[in-house]
Each structure stands twice: as structure tokens, then as C-alpha cells.
Amino acid sequence: MDRTRTVAGLDVHKDSIYLCIMQQGGTIIFENTYGVLTPELRQMCVDMLEHGVTEAAMESTAVYWIPVWNELCGSMELKLVNPYFIKQLPGRKSDVKDAQWIAECLLKDLIKGSFVPEPVVQDMRKLNRRICDLQEDTAYYSNKLDAALQRCGFRLSNYVTTINGKSYRKAVEAISGGCTDPEELVKNIHGRIVNRHGIENILAAVTGSFSDTDITVIGQYWELIAIYDRQSQECQRQLTALCEAHFPVEYKRLQTIPGVKERAATAIIAETGVDMRMFATAAALVGWCGLKPRNDVSNGRYKCRRITHGNRYLRQILIEISWVASRTRNCFFSNFSYVQTTVKKKSKMKIQVAIARKILVAVWHMLSKQEDFIDIYLKGLEKEKEMDEKLKTLESKAVL
Image (tube, rainbow, N blue to C red; front, side, top):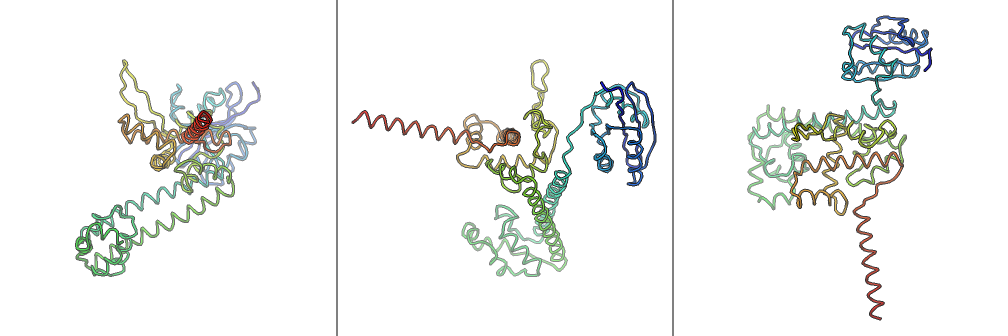
């Protein structure tokens, strides 16, 4: 072991940072407290380099660690540590001694750094998570808009599959513009919906009592949803451009998975990156995502089989992919879903989680081995066809 090894422990707070620099043998050579403004962070970096610091560790305290990381990552090796694992080790609790304890744990190699992706992937993460937030806000205000319309007696949502459909949106756009005549509103409804439920029912559904205040509120909700949609599309365009510029091969490769298109492929790359060396095995990636079932067993009885906590943004997009993949004809995932839910009578929601886990395992292997997705179900069908052709050939020869 290098006897001149110098490490630093940082206890990061919202308005202060406690620094402790320690050499091999546990000798403290420097301690100080800094503010969180950028000039103070840069001065802290200078002080650390002057004392020969080559490694530093800090706790992942909310978002306060990110500016510190950005200032130090170009000058030394950094480790981001989950506070839960630091607190598991015996030690004394205070701000200064916390920094000492982090430095001592780093010096003795008792802690492992968390996954922090490269700057390009971090930018992609910001865009992806912004899209997720915008989609949540859109869903929230869409429900608010429908509630406002229901109060006015507008019942079209009772006859359409989703309030995000074209017919519903066209009718709402007309109302937000001041048009409340049922005869005019019904012209925006698709003919298939009218034929299914009858013109009388649809005409009655779009008939309501709208005051000027109602139209103002509905118009504001509609404008807000339009803004969220526009911002979401803008973020997605920028996210796709980053993927095509920096990871074009992996971006196309992920789209060979059933159910994965532009949105899903960009989201996966944004959350995991393309370098799988941080995750030693596919199981490690599954556990980091939070799709691994916990085995809470006591006295031979399973108390809980729920999935663990993890990256909720990645888990959300994988569940969405699993629903699409389970409905894609002639693929492994749809066949697996059919067998598990129809033949073995298992819960459809649990099977979607299982499919999401299988997709993530496939992602790990594809990015690690630089291979496209291979559908074993289709491969089996091809082998069956080859066998059938051989049998037919043998039968024809036997007849001759």
C-alpha cells in the first residue's frame, strides 16, 4: 500500500462544507470549513491540491453534492457514497467528525462509490427527467381540465377511450376558443365514435352549460397543457440529438428490442449510460434499478416479495416497454406473457415487472457485448420451419 496516500472526506450541507484531509496511518493534516458559493468551492479545490489530495469522498446529500462534484471531478478521483452505508459503520456523530470519518473510511477502503455517469449522460438525464416531470404535470392538469368540463355537463370523456384522443382534444380546443354550440362541437368527433354510441348520445354528451368564467378556466388549463406538450417535445428532440451524436450505435441497437423506440431508447441511455463496467453483472444493474424482488423469509415463510427501491425513472420506462412488448406479436415477451397469465393464471401486473426485468438484463448483455437483440422465440420458430421442410423433403424422397 502506498504510504504517501492522501485522501479527503467532505461533509456536504446546504450552506457549508466540512473538509478533512488525512494521510496514510490516519494522521489528519488539514481541516477547514467552507461555504458553498462557487469561489469558495474553487478555493477548497486549490487547498486540497496543495496538500496533495488524490482521492476524495462525499455523501450524496440531496442535490447539494453536485456543484462540489463538478468543481473537483477534473482534479482528483472522487467517490459518491450513500449515507446509509456510511452510518452503518461505527463512529461519532458531528459535522467535523463526519468529515474525519468519511476520510478514514476512504483511506481504509471501507466504502464503495455510487454510479455517477459522464457529463454527457448527466445532461441527458436532466432532459429525460424533465420529460418525466412534464408528463406527470400534463396528466395532472388533463384530469383537472376534464373535471372542469364535467362540472359544466360536458360528458364526452364517458364515450371515448382516453381524454388524450384527437376527438376529445379538438372539442376542448373549440370550447377554449369560445365555441359551445353542440352542433359545432359534434363535428370534431370522429365518425367511428359517433357510429358506436349514436349521434343522439354524442350530441347530448357535448351539450353543456358554459359561463364566461368556465370558458376562461378551461382555456387556461388548455394553454397550460399545450405548453407542457411543447416543452416535452423540445426536450425529446434535444435528447435524441445527443444520443445520435454521442451514442449512435447503441441508440439503434436498443431499438431492436420489441417495444423500444425513440423515447424508450433515449431514456435507457440517459439513465444507465452505455458503459456497463460499473455494473459487474446484469443482476447488479437490476438491483440498482429496483426491479429485483426482495426475499423477506422468516421461518420458511415469505413475508414480502415486493421489488426493491432504485432508479424510478428507469423502472417507469421499462414497465411501459413491458406493456408494449407483451402486446407485440410473435416475440419472446408476448409469448412469455401469454403462458404466464393465461396458462399459469399469474397476476398480469407481476408478469409485467418480470418482463421489465428480462428487458433490462437484455440491455446489459447488449451494451456489454455490443450485440443486437436476439429473439429466442423467433429463433425457435425458424428451427421448427427448417425441421418441417426437412421432414417434407424426406417424405417426398420416400414416396419416390
